[in-house]
Length: 288
Ligand SMILES: [Fe+2]
Ligand SMILES: [Fe+2]
Image 1 (cartoon, rainbow, N blue to C red):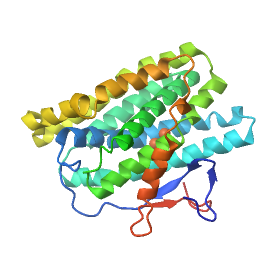
Image 2: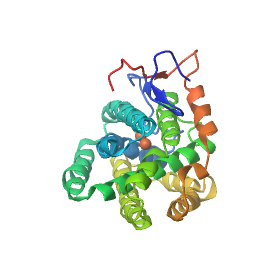
Image 3: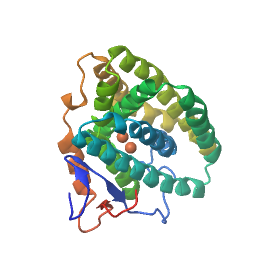
Image 4: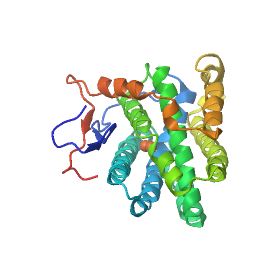
């Protein structure tokens, strides 16, 4: 999907997500599944702060890159991430309209991560942490798209997540390659992963539990049975997550050893159909 005037590097095209979420949305918009809905709601609360962190970190790499093609790749990565933050933040108003109290969690987490932890973290370690979070984003994208986990979700929200996941796949090599260029030590990659993995899954779990307490779904048996299906018997996310984590920890790992660009393109095409497009390629003249 390209258009005249669109800015891109091969395989990385920034797009604008068009829906403004002004309709009514079911509370458990992920096919009635409360646990999965709240895991993704928590992800949506973490995204804008996270994307800002990625952009700040990768921007610092730019003066260290000699190759014009690689610089363009990083710039296109930053444009994609900027749009993800904008799209997910727009969804916050749906959660607020549904009565969820989200501001306290979001501002406390972002304050700790980006006002306390970030200034204390050396640049190379920050880059390693971004590389690991980007791996998590890419494998979540892979599993959600390959297993069509969002097939029964509310269509606009399915589009939001599938657009984001597809672009995470498109640019999954960028932070990893910058880490290889600037801090190629294996120990640094492992250290970043050792910090990020527990932090990410703790925040995701805590945020989802908090939302489930707020709407009472935490205390319903079907919430836990659907979570068990997601983790073990249906989507096997526990096993798949371990597989992707161990892949990242292999010394010879590279993100494109799992080439899932066709999977990402299929989702982008699905959400760019002329009948009801929800994505538009970002033009050079568009503000980021
Ligand atoms: Fe993103
Ligand atoms: Fe990303």
